[in-house]
Length: 398
Image (cartoon, rainbow, N blue to C red; front, top):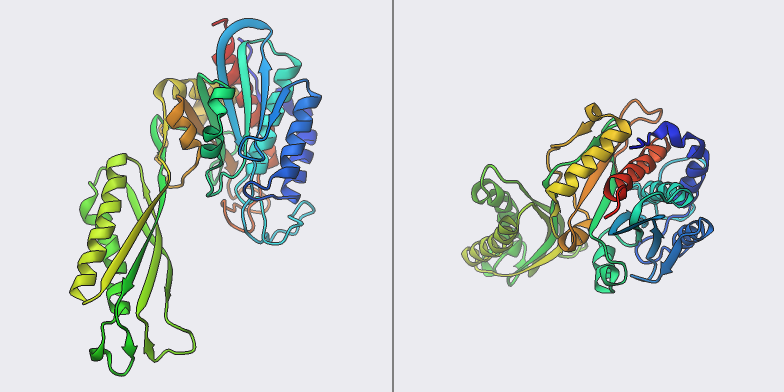
């Protein structure tokens, strides 16, 4: 069996870097990835790969059949969208669009999958079919869910699906993965406390929802500490508080809105967080003579890797960088990914590729920060991983 390494794809690094930096310079946010999807479609077409466009508005799927007979079909997925964030980098490929930035590395994810598609199209010596899934709107709007709802797996049947994400702070030349829950469910919630408000000098004449809200913010942290079992993980964080009028600090507002995020790794804990947030809010509100209106919004489910496909991903990564450079039982990560929707429908696995740490010239900047940049030195590594994965999945006739 051929083992593909980054060195074998080294001749492509300059071209892949140019593609990645061009996409980085022209970031497009959720469902607006028109230019990016055009680049993807043009590249795939030029390599003789069948292209379908239009799922989830800007999604692109390229289909490549192997030269050898086989019925198995796999999906390889990359995300394309950027974030609403003002970039603070000053290099030549920095974003040209105000308040839009590739701050999560989706430009690199897209480019790595393109690199693999190019090589596979040049030598499709495998048995079966590969669908290259370029997905829009991962950042918060659930582009994966939309693609599925619009018939992704009916139009492009997949026996298995795989995804990959870069990981700043993790060394270049290493991969990380685990079987089972790897990334958290990402939910949001809000509680509105309603009272009468009143004059700040005479709080006894009304009910003060700010006092109730303050107690609730502290109590939220006890939900995880006292209701979630110690061997499980969960996070509740407050991210937004709104009340009153800036010009009237002597007025006790009649309403206080609190919004936050919830992270969990199992359906049971997810339901517990939803229930306890409402119960704690109602109890504290009642004690303070106020009313609580709670809402819980289930966004992305937990990302759960299947055991068989995780083992294949580990083997593919080991073929790429050596077994000693693959962490196969990484600690679950409280971030979330809408690739989880695909893994709810199909068995598969999601792997992290090291983006480097402080050894980089500019230091280590994490995702979703204004100084982040994808490390071009791992482009061929990611492409080689995809090639090895296809060989393992489709190397023999089904």
